[in-house]
Image (tube, rainbow, N blue to C red; front, side, top):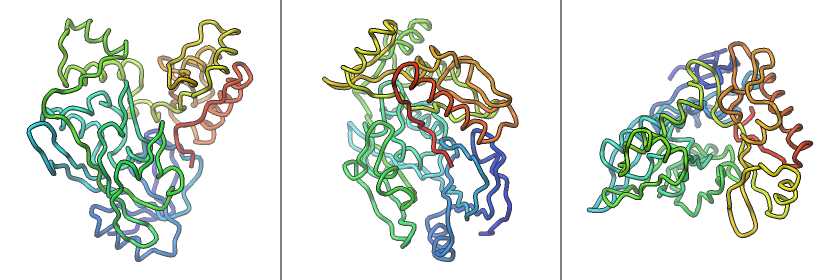
Length: 337
C-alpha cells in the first residue's frame, strides 16, 4: 500500500470538486485497513467511500483512506429468504441489480442510488417507500482507534429518517466493511405505492410487476429527474424532506393552500423539500458554475468548475429563503466537509 501525496479528489466525489488530499491510500481488504490504521494511529484520518454524499469545501489535511473492499455473496438461505452480504466498496446500484438477478426481493425500489454499499447504513438511504432498515440485518465495522472488528445488528444501528448511530454518537469512530440484508426469495412484497412508479408501469402496460419491472421503473424515473454525476456533478438529493408537526403544517397551509405533505405519524407530516425550493423560485437557477437542477429542485449541481464553497453558499441561500418564506427549516442531507 503506497501513501500518495497531494492527490486530487475530483474523481472520488460525485460533485466533481477538485479538492486535494494531503495524503491518500486505497485499501482492498480488512487486513490492509487495519494495517493502515495501526501504522498511522497518530494521524488525522478521513474515510472515503463512493464520494456520493459529501460536499468538499476545502482540501483535506489528513490521511484519506479510500475503502475499496469488493465482494458479494449469499451467506444464508432457506425456501423463503436469503441473507446476502456485500463488501463496503461494492457499487450500490450494481449490488441491487445483482440481487434482482438472483430473484431476491427488497432492494429494487432503491435502484440507481449513487454511492457504495458501505455508506448506506450511515445514511439509512431510501427511495420510493423503502429504506435500508427494512431489510438490513447487520454490518461489520472496524473501530478506528483500536482496529477491533464489531458487528452491529439492526437495533444497535438506531436507524431513523436518513439517520443512524454512525451519524450521531459513533460518528468518525467506525469504518463499515460489510453489510448484510435479508431478502425474499418468493412472495415478494412489491411496493408500487408511489404514484410515479404506478405511472411508469402503466406507461409500459405492466399491471402485474415483478422485481425487475419495479427496478426499471425506478431507474427511468430517476434518470428523468436526476442528472448523471458523470455528466453533471451532483450528490443526488442535497436536502432532507423536513418533518414538522401537523399544527405547524396547518399554519403554513393556511397561507400556502397548495403545499404538499405526507403523513409520518398522528402528530407529524413530511413536507417535500423539493416543492418548497421550487416555490421559492430556485429550480433551474444558476449562480456561476453552481446551481439548482432544472428537473429536480432537491439537487444542487456543479456545471463545471464550481468550488465546494460556492455550492455551499447556494445551499445556505436556499435554507435562509425557505425559512423566511414558509417558516420551515430544511436540513442538508449531504455531509459538508
